[in-house]
Image (cartoon, rainbow, N blue to C red; front, top):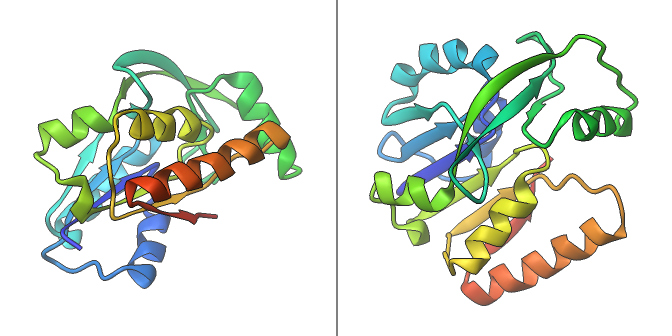
Length: 187
């Protein structure tokens, strides 16, 4: 693998798991995307030891924009952060039997996969993409399909709340497969 894009890098726990699943070497170019400012210093402290790595301080979406990021209010909490709104955030927590009264809100830049590919001269066919982006995966994958981008593999955590989301996941897998991309569940 020549390149890895880890969207929703959080505290790099997903990267540790990815290293067990993929042949990530010191030559692999690694781009971490994380909108939560509570995680940035941890990622930045680890970039040098990871090697050939950089951090994009933004959220992913289907258009360049600004949004309000809702976070747990503490770096230690592993409840994620989302630009999908407070209602989505609360519903996501409830799904796991969690509740969070302490929330923080951060204005956050939204960027697109197409923009990252262009800016960093990425060939997506030589790239593994991990999406753990708390609900925004639906618009990002639809954007990938609409732009006919073929990745080597996409790992995605789908936030499923109803049959409509389950059908979308199935349709995405089929459409990505037709483009030559393998879609894998991420948890």
